[in-house]
Amino acid sequence: MSGQTGTDVILIGAGIMSATLGTLLKELVPDWKITVFEKLGSAGEESSNEWNNAGTGHAALCELNYTVENPDGSIDITKAIKINEQFQLSKQFWSYLVNRNLIQNPKDFIMPLPHLSMVQGEENVAFLKKRFEALSNNPLFEGMEFSDETEKLKEWIPLIMNGRDSNDPIAATKIDSGTDVNFGALTRILFDHLKKQDVEMKFKHSVDDIKRAADGSWELKVRNVNTGAVERHTAKFVFIGGGGGSLPLLQKSGIPESKHIGGFPVSGLFMVCNNPEVVEQHHAKVYGKAKVGAPPMSVPHLDTRYIDNKKSLLFGPFAGFSPKFLKTGSMFDLLGSVKPNNVFTMLAAGAKNVPLTKYLIQQVMLSKEKRMEELREFIPNAKSEDWDIVVAGQRVQVIKDTADGKGTLQFGTEVVSAADGSIAALLGASPGASTAVHVMLELIKKCFPQELKAWEPKIREMIPSYGVSLLKNPDLIRELHASTAKTLGLSEDSSLQTASVS
Image 1 (cartoon, one colour):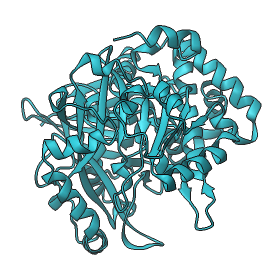
Image 2: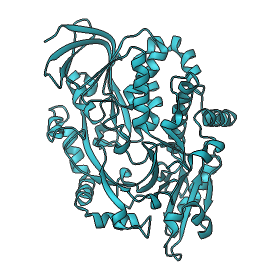
Image 3: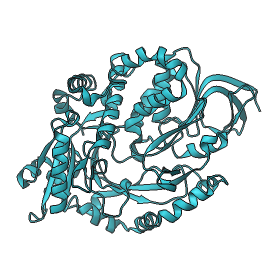
């Protein structure tokens, strides 16, 4: 066992969250020493990997589960506004990095792409029209269009409309300011930048234990996966950003805030089109409506994606169940996460979520042909031989005791931190990566309150709308939309060039 190595900040997990936090901190305090530990061989291999996420670039432009119909028939757009504002922070931060030449080519990770919502049936068409009316008056959603006319829809989504029964009511909304973001590529770009800033990257290093030292710092027991050698590392601040692997490490820290929290793993499958002729007929992200009784994570969507500089077409998600907390995890992850302090929380969640469990089991049992039937609700003429199945990343939904009762399943992301701010973990899944900048700014606010005042001018330089309600400043929204679109290559002149990328 080697001696102790001290550092200012330790980041566990080389995903988009650690990459974002590390980049923010290096801009705020360049002289802080940062060390990153990653169990796998390179950055962005687990939850942040581009093949482990089917639809990315979440700005609530097309996801129907972020706009709920109230009992009186009105549409609540609060969550959509919140997520859109958070995504704007990400775009501003990325623009700052491009303007400073810290990121060379934004097209390596972000592309302009229309976002559409599509529904079928009279009731759903009425809902979509009301949703459109509620959103299109809002400056964050400026430019949104609605149509229930077959000819217009054929223009927008030819692949989806081809071979469709014209008697069935169908409608869509379209907004051209959407994007496709490759978070795997962005993660690797940010870590390449951090390496140049003397951030120590230790791949194939697994954090086995976390303990509080007598001086209040944190001591980590780290194992070299290749050699088995164990090292001790200490830090004043630790961030656990290991995706599904965050919960077991948080539990090992022993902080009171880690008690009464459980995790429910959900796996996913997607279908990817292997026929370039079909891929070329679709240029959008199109989100449908989840079936009645299905969980929010099951919203079907057909996404154009840019992966390895190539246009791809993905459809999903099909949910599944595995007791692993990571794709590369252990079959004992779920069992190992059950502790005396969270066993009743977990049992309550199990009792409450029998329908979800049943749904996941049904999804696991689906044959490829059954999945093709679901795909044909989107693409009536889809041929089985044109599509392959891809296993997506694992997601771990947070289970905790809330005002809604014991063992409530949470469908968002949240930061759990010690009272003194010396350690924090990111738990949960969607919308995750798209709101990484917002989530890490909240973490900075929580964990570094003493430094915040001195850091705020620099944060505003990086993110001009920091601390400002965009909703109350429509002129600022337009100004930021225009400037970030120009810097990130998302303006109309650049979209003409990118549309032909294949």
